[in-house]
Length: 371
Image (cartoon, rainbow, N blue to C red; front, side):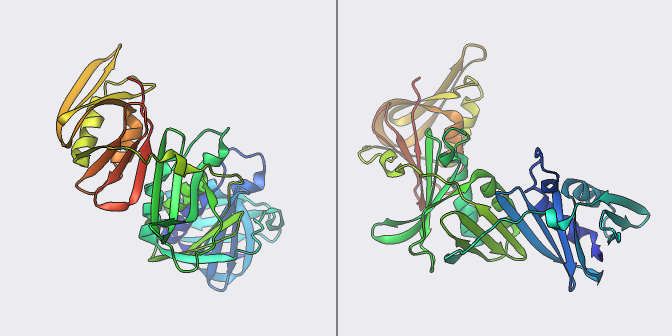
């Protein structure tokens, strides 16, 4: 095998695929990137057995072939090569060593057999539809902060993607919760998504997908079954196993009878939370909100640091004292882009609903704290 490729193109592709490699694995081949060169194209693949990323990039291929090389090492080498350089890669006859040359630099990397490289068995993916890249970015950004990190409740360690209805209109809905807060995002159901199974995207898949679609083109094709999902766009394909578990009935968590409504400027509110919570206790991050008519007072105290308060005006007429985890509250308010943030409450012990006045596609629920 022999190919020549522009350093910038190779670096970009390696950057995309190498992050799928699990740093702490005991199987050597899983640290490697599979490289196949033929017909003017270099194809790169990495996997951790649960997720697989493939990318194709243009290259000069005088001699086709395939091998696997240490992904992180190769990425580091290419990253440190001079801008604008051409990278020549040659595999020896035995297939055990790969030479990487650029200018006066010369590296030799040990290779493992292509036959050792595992592939995720995908099978049939009966449901297929496309959504705009901007919508998928919003879906992830508006929900992923609420994913759980507790391994005991593994079925919460991801985003639940499913078909639902809102006022009789079919929607594609994404939900994430860790038991302390819940985030819900929905969009019109794409053509082809009707009848799709409800699936849970794993946390790592969500993170890698979000990075990959940062510069994605207009549409993302999504194909899925009950246990696998595939995202295809540009020259990249991400395939992942899904979490095998049952997502809880999140509708029961969304309160229906909250009658105390307060509207605030989200930017002012976010800034006040951020400032006052500087003093809050490091573990609970407790923040107290006192509502008196059209006045809101945010306060926090710590035995070690002292105390802080800040007042702001709100639209509403409610008398209530309620506490929240300041970090959880910031995670939600920072997602609100509009000019108005609406908080719907019942009492100091019940969940609060937070919504963007100008964006009905998102809904957030946060559990209160005792303060």
